Amino acid sequence: MRALTWHGEQDVRVEEVPRPEIVNPTDAIVEVTATAICGSDLHLYNGRMPTMREGDVLGHEPMGEVVEVGTDVETLAEGDRVVVPFTISCGSCWFCENDMYSLCDNSNPNAELAREMMGQSPAGLFGYSHLLGGYAGGQAEYLRVPYADVGPVKVDSELPDEQVLFLSDVFPTGYMAAENAEIEDEDTVAVWGCGPVGQFAIQSAELLGADRVIAIDRVPERLEMAREYGGAETIHYEDEDVYDRLMEMTGDRGPDRCIDAVGTDAHGTGLAAASDRAKQKAKLEDDRPYVLREAIRCCRKGGTLSVPGVYVGRVDNLPFGAAMNKALTINTGQTHVQRYLDPLLETIESGEIDPSFVVTHRADLADGPELYETFNDKDDDCIKVILEP
Image 1 (cartoon, one colour):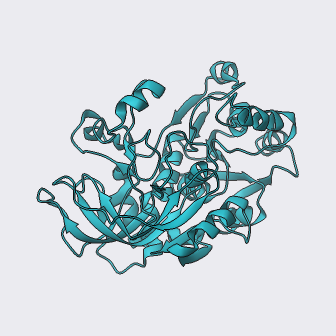
Image 2 (cartoon, rainbow, N blue to C red):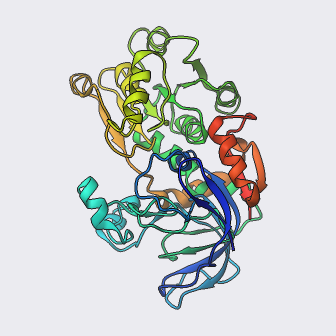
Image 3 (cartoon, rainbow, N blue to C red):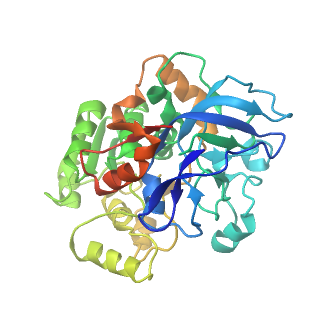
């Protein structure tokens, strides 16, 4: 089958790889009908994530049709149309039973490697390094889905792929980010980063009762999308100082809730941003925590900071003293996707939200390497890419 494979920094290729087969009786095989390139994939593309190996199949936002099931699979059958969450979860460990699916104890076969680096291992993820299981991803014609009774959600309606595909990751991730922000009525919420996760965090903040949402980015088309679809007020951080502007907009109190939807590859202005880039290049830190620092500084006393943006390792000069003295609550984590699949599917089916608004590019799998570059460089007004194998 054809798949997009990783071969080093900014080197993604279309290659012929072996078609997956049933390995365990709880597996299913899905023929992929649509798959997306995620902002998190760019961390792999730019060489930020350790333990990648040449030839690894990328992608963690797939959907398609079930073409084979293992003997122990009970909830799926051949012909079912499903969206596959990026988190791989067993459904029976303590964490899964408590709806913390991204912390599954059993789905990462390389748990000891993760334990050495992090203290404990999170769940395995599709297409996201050997630290997190070494599972082949969904930017391919076929995908093996472990624990098939736990992960995929069936789509019985005739909604097009592009309306339900983002249940695999970015819609639940944006929603959990807003939920983690602990939003209350009349809150002002500031969202750093207006990529797809940021866009869904904006819309989810409004669903959860936010009075105002302020979106922060530097890409004009992303800011326009936040205004048009999310009703957000916007700040272009290269044109004005974010802290000064937020204080002006909130009566010098600061936003009640802050969401870092950027993560490891944050851009910024001034010496701090330049220092982060230099330290990252010299391997003195793994992530660029510019947004994290700025959000801690801007958030009002007693407020909440939610961090859906992916970080991979060490950060430098984090003002934790400010977080402590301002009594900030900080919530973060990979998304417990399975917790949100059914309720968010209902919001799509009812017409409450149409997630396809983020899609700017549609192409064949063969165009994947070119579109990775386009997405990475933010060329051609590219915000979200769907590939059809």
